[in-house]
Image 1 (cartoon, rainbow, N blue to C red):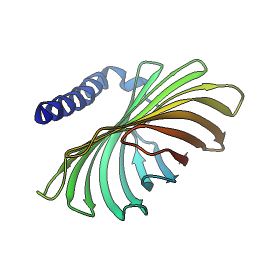
Image 2 (cartoon, helix red, strand yellow):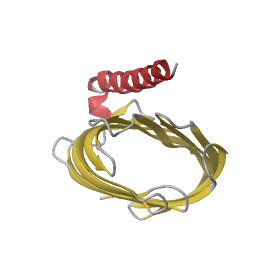
Image 3 (cartoon, rainbow, N blue to C red):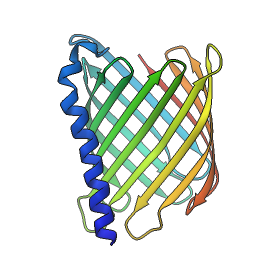
Image 4 (tube, rainbow, N blue to C red):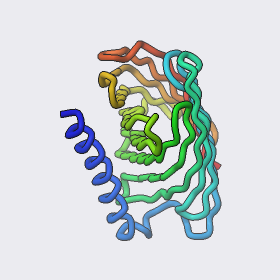
Length: 215
């Protein structure tokens, strides 16, 4: 039963990415990443219960390279990673980013797949960070996470409020679920987000403070 569940998760993740990639050529002219434009990003998160992280990247046109560090001071887990990816728009309301990375975690090496879709319609936006970790060594465990899925509504020029949801799956552990409130404040070239999560199943309550910037 567990093996079937993981096959469905991996299949769904692959299908999402494949559909996005197939749709990308048709929307190439709608992307905000021109062929000659250089850009970069920085994103960081502090959490009272789970891992914090710092990611940075540099792009040229739609393609980018990234490096990152993940640390959980509560469990001692650490992770260093590097990878490449692409971002693109599909239609006037949807944008996507897909990345492949190699990661050296505390217990093993992993191959990682990241998928970040964003849908913006009027004053509302829906964002998700979907992650799949495939162990390259026997000491590792297959992992899948939606970290997080957020729905936000603009209530002012720089402020948006809404809800957030977290899903965590790992071989040998119970599936974790958490949900709560989110507050995002737009700042020059970026945004600061506060998440208040309530553990629903195999997940502790936590507070998260995130920052991201594009340049």
